[in-house]
Image (cartoon, rainbow, N blue to C red; front, top):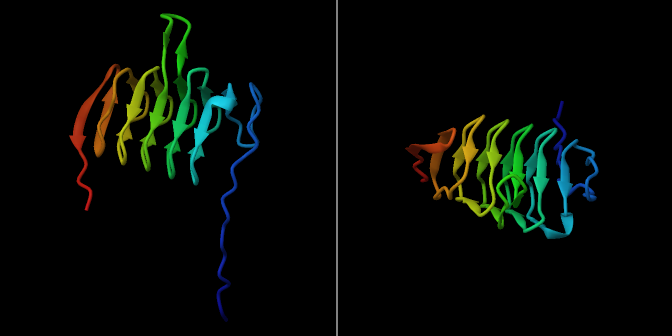
Length: 136
């Protein structure tokens, strides 16, 4: 008996301002969202793109995350950039003017208020470097 070659084709979901996508996450100001391919955004994540959010290819964002390009509490604003193949753990918060570097990992329940270089793992409130990741 031969196994069938099952190919999954990734399709970008329809994203409308303030409405849940079919994957149950919400984006405000989707016209300011630049998204690559093969990204995965977990259920109940909120993304505010008022001042720009870029999600590059192969990014994974856990459930219940908050990504802010505009914070109304302290009036900070600026783009958020999630570089290729980075991973954001569940229940994490990313503040305005932050770039998460390529292949970097943010641990669950972390608060990110500054840039994370590529190939690093950060965690905590506020997040701090936990280890460097070797890429071969």
